[in-house]
Length: 134
Image (cartoon, rainbow, N blue to C red; front, side, top):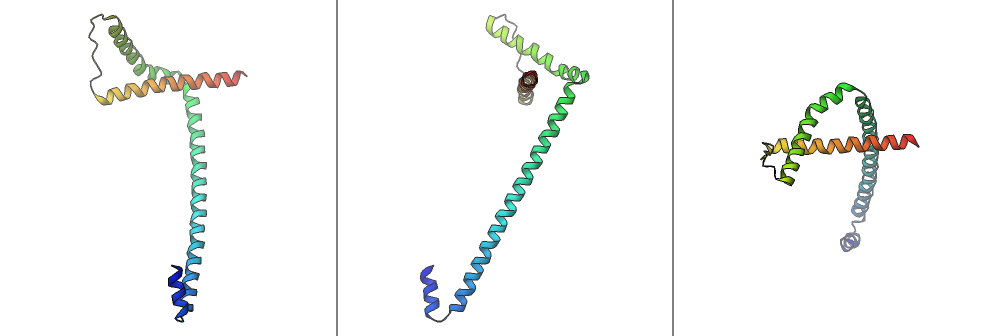
């Protein structure tokens, strides 16, 4: 690149080179502005994520206080718990119950999600209670 610029200056086209340099400087300024804008947008996005997380934490805290929530959750969690216990007991002690697997991959995924939810919520509640007791 430097060789091409030196050649253009030698043949008398220094004005073209100067315009090219100014164009490169302007492009660099715009890149800085783009980076500034990108940084500002990233910061605003992060502020929105934090606000959404705060709102969802409040919602989760509020729903834990409503008995109907726990009754509704129990409609799904208790049958899953009975099935899970039957699978483990039958597999461990060979009772011959022949407990069927859940019929679809989606139901197996939902069951896994419910188990994650139980431990996440339980761990979260225990953690909050431990912090509040201090």
